[in-house]
Image (tube, rainbow, N blue to C red; front, side):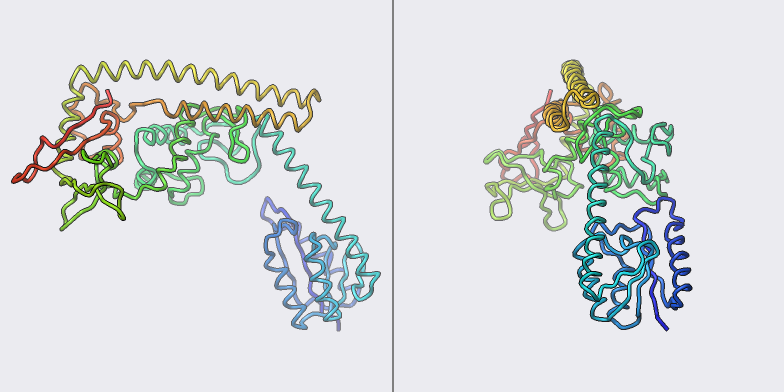
Length: 463
């Protein structure tokens, strides 16, 4: 009795029904019956590429069975089902030679790996299989790149949040959520706070799983939701699908999320004036450092900080003074006039930058058209696209740096409304409101004999 193992593999099973490997197994079993061999095990790697280099669990189990003397032969539909890597093939040849195993395929017949001729044939077939895989991968990469530069849809996977399964049609309820998330993030709310809100209000994700900060970050960072096409993380063209948020919002969101300061900030979030409070002596920011259960802002000296170590202030009375100052400022006509003037100036600057970005995007599209017509070669198109992309990135960073006052919406001219809602706002929203109007808070020297002296606090306003 010849004990044989049947190995089946298919690189892509998009429908997940396994019909490809099922057909391979059927043909292999029919061949085993003709040969009089007994199938003792079947090894199936469904939806798994042999070219990618990723581990194939069932193939490794097959090798273990071959080494363990459990098999006398291996059956496969075609040699390229077993290998598309010369390194893997050499290992397989060694295992077959050691155990004197037979290798039979439905499409290519017997592979006698015990002879130099048989091994040479196997290596030749393997080399051509590798060539085919590499050539196919190169074609796929080129096509994906061309589709991206043309603004066309990408590949498979779950539908993107905010759009229907066709990846073109906006899904209204999810689009409304995305617009709200973008506005609130730009107003200062953290990803953690927004993910918590989504889960608390039972807003469903595409998969139905709970929202995580990483998932939310990926969606907000994606240029797709502003109707733009990305390729390898870079925005390369206007997309064929409609936008949900504006390009300006995407540019600002990406600039905020790319800011290295976000990754290094470790200050506890329950401090309202984080990175706003400074020491009057050394001009260094004060850090959060509680003592005896009391929240404090402290100018920390090395090695734990970079300040002089000679200034500290209790957090609660300081934050109360700043909060009340913000309420008074919001009711004052001076702040209203200054903010209106800043918004007009920012709107004009943003409009100019947006026009420049549109012009550059048009030039990038022209490069794609010229390549399609054969007027320029692929290398010239890619070089031009990269140069234009770099200019667009620069404009996006300038656009993101424009001062905005979203956090103050509904409160300018009505400090009472903010006072009524303050306790219900998240800490991120409170901090965003304060930062929208205050540049810095300088803490002066302590007054002997006084627990807290309001005269130590000097506020520098943005407007």
